Length: 319
Ligand code: SF4
Image (cartoon, rainbow, N blue to C red; front, side):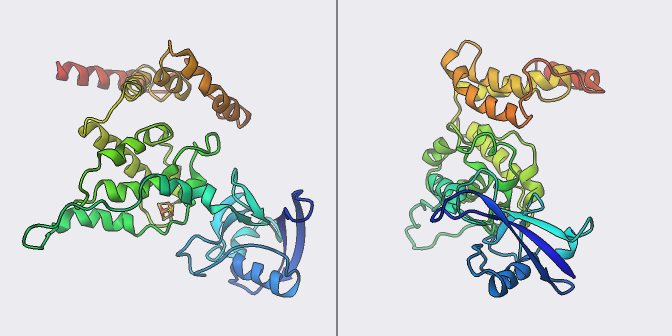
C-alpha cells in the first residue's frame, strides 16, 4: 500500500517556522505508523525528528497526533487511517512547546507537573521488630495505578489543559494518588495541600476524557475524585472548595446538568473581583476554542424536574 504522510516540521536551528513535508512510501499490510516513520527516516529524510523507545505500546515515548487524534505510533496501524484515502497527517501534541518536528517538550508537558506532586513515598517508621506488614487489600488498588506507563495520553485527552496549561493534569494527579493512598505513607497532609491548591484536583471538570484515553484502564478521573474525597476526610478544605461544591450541586439541581461557566464564577466568589479578573484569560482561551459556556444561560435538560425531586428527597432525608 502506498501512503503519503504529511508531517509537521519545525527546526528552531533553522528559521524555526512551522511547515509540513510530504513523504510517499510503500508500507506492508499491517505496518504501524512508527514503522512507516522509521522507513521515511532511513530511506528518505534522515533529518526528520521523532521519538520512540519500547516499540510495543508500553512507554508512551512515540505519542503524536495521527490525523488529529493522539496515538502511540508504535501501536497505530496505518490501515486504520487510510479508509478515506491514502493520506495521513502527523503532528506533535497540542499546546506543548515543540523541540523539533514531532519531538515535543516532555518536561513541560508532564514531568515537571509530576515532580510538583512529590512523587515519592515518605514512609512511616519501621516497626520496632523491624517488620512492617502491609495488608494486601489496599495494595490491590494501588497496583493498578502503579501499572501506569506515564504515557501522557490522559493529559493529551484532558479538556482543561488546552485552556489552562498550568493545571497539574490527570497524569500527575494519578501519580499522586499512588502515594496519597499508600498505607506506608507517614503523613499525606503536606502532599494533599499541593494537590488541592490552585491548578490541582478542583480544576478537573470530570469530562472523563482522560479515562477514555488511558490505554491501561486506570481511570484517572476516578483517582482525582478520590483525592478530593480524601481532602474532605482529612479536613483539608478551603472556602473556595466549599463554594465549588455548593455551586456544582445547585447547578445540577436547577437545570439537570452542570453550568461550567457558573461553576467557575461561583467557585471564585461573586464578590471576589480580583479572583474573577484572573479567570478572564482562561475564559478568553476557552471562548476562542468554542468551549466557554455563558454563566447562568444553561437550558434545562430533559428530565430536569425528576433530578430536582431527587435532590429534594435527599435534602429532606438529611434533616
Ligand atoms: S494514567 Fe493511563 S493515560 Fe495517564 S499516563 Fe498513566 S497509563 Fe498513560
